[in-house]
Length: 497
Ligand code: ADP
Image (cartoon, rainbow, N blue to C red; front, side, top):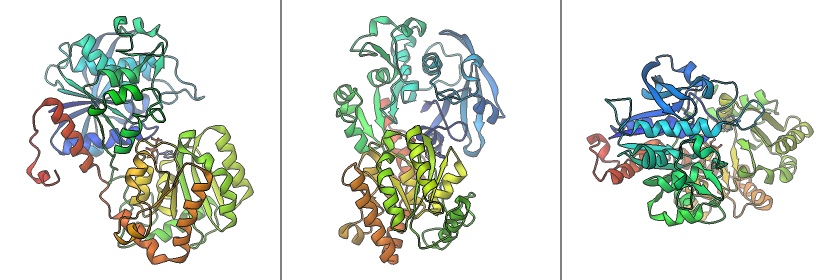
C-alpha cells in the first residue's frame, strides 16, 4: 500500500492551524502500521529551509502557467517521514503565509499555487509520473487546496490510483472565477452541476468532494452536521448524496508533542498520578503573563484563531462578570480586529487579572494549556478541534459548545458521568453567552468547592487514549475498502484492531 498524502501545511515545517497538526501526525501513525507513505507539500521557504537533506527527484513538466517545477525529497527527522516538495520559486518562495500576504490579503494567484499542488499529486499517481519506482495506489487529499487532485486524476491524468479527500473545515472552499479553467487546463465540459461548478464559480472543494472515491471528515458528529444546511456551507446536498461514502474519524493528538509528562516548554512536568507540578506551571504562567500569582484564582485559558467560528465573541460580554467573581483569564490568539480590540480592552481594564497576547506562539500555547485550570472553546462549529484534546491531556478540563468534534470528545459532568468516570469537561446547551456563563459557573462550582471531584474530572481526561494510533487504524480501513483488500499489519498491532 503506497499512499501520497497531499497537503498545504505540515507540522513542524509550516502551520496555520489544525490541518498542519493532522498532516504532521497521521502519516507517521500510518507509517508505523507499515503503510508506505510520502507527504507532498509546496516548497515554501519554511519547508526548504527546514529540510536540510533535500535531494533532486525529478523535473515536473507541462504544468499550468509555470511549465516546469522541480520535485525534491527530504525527511522530517523527528518522525522519519519522507516529504516530496514542489520547488517552484515564483509560486511558493515569498514572504508571508501559505495563503495570505503579510497584510492578511489572500495571494491573488492561489488558484495556480494550489492548482499546481493538486496537479502534481495527480501526475505522481498517473501513467506519466516522472518517478518510476514509487507509484501511489492511494492519493489522500486534504481540504480545498488539494481538491482539484481527484478531478485531475480522473479527467486528465487517467490515474488508476484511488483518491480520498479529508474535510478539515467546510468554511474554506477555494471558489474562483471560471476564467481560471483554461489557465489550470481543466476541461470546461465538466464545469457543470455534475462537476466542479458551484454557483457559477470553480470550486476546488466541490471538485474534491465530487470526484474523490471516498470522503472522510474529522469527527463523526461533523460528518452528520455537514449534510445539513447549517454546517454544509452550500455543499450539504452533494455531501448527503454521497453520505454512504462519508466517514467521520476523530483526530488524535501528537502525544510526543503534547504530553505534560515530557513537555520541554513547562518549568515542571506532571501527570495524572503526579498532578502537583501543574500548580508550579500555573504560578509560572501567572508570573510570565503579569497575572497575580494566586493558586486559588480559577484561571481560564484560550488559545485560538479569533474568528466567528470560534465563538469567543460570546465570552466578551460575560468576562468582566467572571473576573469580578475572582477568575483570571489568559488568551493567546489573533484574528478579527474587533475581537482583538475587545479582549485588549478587557486586559487594560483588569491588570493582574486578564492577560491578552495577540500573535502566534507555540511555547506559550503549551504553557497556557498546562497552566490554566479550564480551557474555553465555545465554537459555533468545530470539525474536530485539537485544543480541547490538548486540554484533556493536560488536566485542563475543556468547556465547550456541543458541536462537531467537541461533542464527540468532551463528556459533560453530571451525576451519571461523574459516577461512571467518563466526565472530562463541561458542555454548553447552546451557542450563547448565557449558556457559556452557566457552563463556566458549573465548572467553577466544582473547582471552588470540591477539589477531589475536580481532580477526578482532570484524571478522567488525562487517562484517555487520545493518540493517533486508533484513528490511523480507521483511515487504514478506509484505504482497504478503496483497494478492496485487507492490508497485513504488524502482528503486534492486530489487537488494537
Ligand atoms: P483550527 O485548526 O480551526 O484553528 P484546532 O483546534 O483544530 O483549530 O487547531 C488549532 C491549532 O493551532 C492547535 O494546535 C493550537 O494550539 C494552534 N494555535 C491556534 N492559535 C494559536 C496561537 N495563537 N499560538 C499558538 N498556537 C496556536
